[in-house]
Length: 143
Image (tube, rainbow, N blue to C red):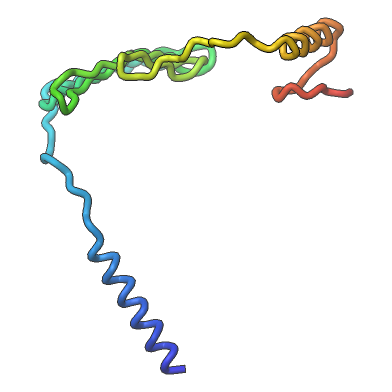
């Protein structure tokens, strides 16, 4: 019993030493000063922005929408090659919609939709026109 406790103690001590000796992340630089900062709020409407000494600029404007908040804004930051990356976005009932040269663009469809898929879509639309209801996953609702 004492031997088991001693083994557990030694294993725990080794595990603790391993965790302590793990390489720590190396963060470059220190604090970044905010050069300019603005914010305004009036009920559901708001506007904010800031600029920091490392070249980061953030701006956003928001208002109440039909399904929550509508926000549009942009942010930019300096890349390691010293170029400035810019992202503009809209966030509304359709989700977060960013635009930037940095983001991958959708690939144009090369192949047409297969005929059997078009037939199924047409058949489902015909059923909907007859009053058949479907759930959010496309399964028919029987009631």
